[in-house]
Image (tube, rainbow, N blue to C red; front, side):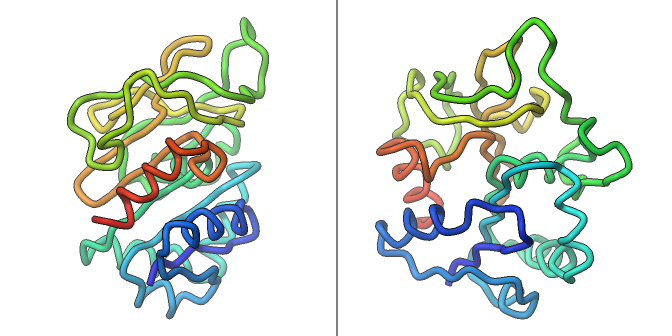
Length: 196
C-alpha cells in the first residue's frame, strides 16, 4: 500500500486519482501507524514551507524518517521535495528533514514569481524515477521557491537560473513539479515509482 501523507498541505485527491489510474493500491492518511506500515510513501505539498511543521506535530515526521531508515521508497512532491532539504528561505525557522544538503531559495526578482505553468526538463541519464521520460519533456510547475542543484539532482529546469526539478538518492525521490498535473509524462514517472 502506498501512503499519501495528509498533513493539511497537499494536492491529495489529484495524486490519489493519478495513482488509482495506474492501478496502484494507495490511501490518503494522517495516521503515523499507517504510514509506518506502507510499502511506499508519497508526500505531496502545496503552499508555504511552514506547513511542514504539522508533520512533526502529527507524529508523521518520525514515521516517515523511520520508514526511510528501513529503505521504504519515498517520493516528495513540490513542498514535499523541498522538505527533503535542510531548510527554506520561505520559513527560516522551519527545519526540513535534512536528507539533502542545502537551502531552498526564492526566485530572483528578474523573473515573475510564482513560477506557474509548463516548463521543459533537462533530464540526466541515471534516474530510475525518470526512466523513459525524454529530456525535453514538459511538466507542470507552481512554486515561488526553488531547490539548489546538487549531486542528488537528476533533472534541472531553467527559470531565472537553473534549479533542481527532480532529485534522487538511493530509495529517495523528489520532484518540484506536479506529476499528477503533468499528463502522460507525470503518469510515466508515477508508474516508475510504483514499480520500484
